[in-house]
Length: 426
Image (cartoon, rainbow, N blue to C red; front, top):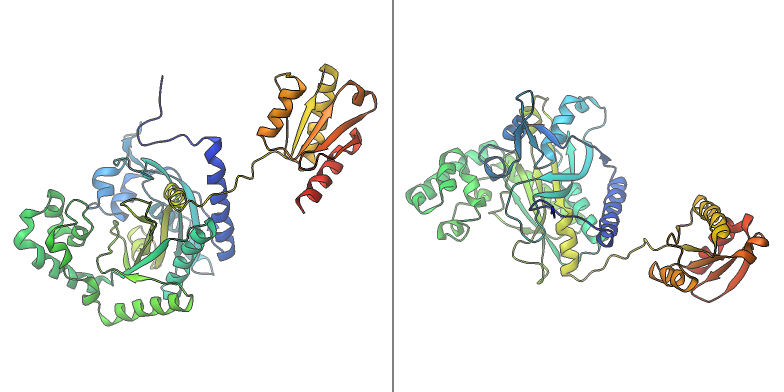
């Protein structure tokens, strides 16, 4: 028997309705905030990710699915969505649109070769937004507000926002020098990755999972202490806007995120549910001024976030928050005999054209077995069509909630059943 590859999963109908519900919330929220959907290829040129994500990151060094095509071109399954979105922004000259920032969202599969954990897969579905073309700190607050709204509308209550500033290049360079001086005397106590990052990108040391408990981590120089006046003012404005939106937050000076393109605002949204597990991050994002220029475009500051749909659903489970299944059938058609079955197919067509969710038996079972099937599908109405009903060009319609039953003309089935269901729901 062939099974799914390690780190992937099949999402079966008893779970897929939850995905659909969350996806609907996401699309509705993005519409309210006026973010428009963008769909980019699942694979890109490898250079896109090495240039944008950063060649010292775990994603580029260890986790990308990279291959050569028949033209000997190096391609990579997308490990995240920002790089592709910014590439499209540059390639299609969206920076020329009169209204900036351009506000985009994406939702689709991403791929990272990492150890499978609860809610983490090698193929996972990520929702993210990007607001490109504005350096206004109010946009930072809007992006964070959208993420928080999605979680709240999905039913999550036990979440918190963690915030930091990574500053501009001047602030980061001053902090970098302080980090090198701090870690260099004892760098041999750290993993090989951290030793390689000391000179190239010491900020990545703070993001190391292996050495996170080393004593030097707790007392490492804080980037917020090295913010120049411009960066500090920017960060204060972001916090002021979040306060105005009544969005609570915590400041974490060690929050650096795992991608090289971030600067200024960085944030994560975490689950605080006791049943969620050790890795609490649900979503993360930040500002990436300079990334558009890195990919060949004009100066266009941007900010965004990404969230895992798998981890959102896991957090809902941890909070014991149920997503209601609205996929139950409205009407179930029961045919008793060959001729009635032909007529039942026409009834099914009329119901569906009237917008009534409908189904019928395709196993030629007895009346009792078909009624049980209607119960399992949680049908609101059962339509029974036998030889007698067919002779009168009618069908027996039973409202299961009340037991009310009436004979309806075949020509009126769609409208009548639709009306019965509407009245029952009121």
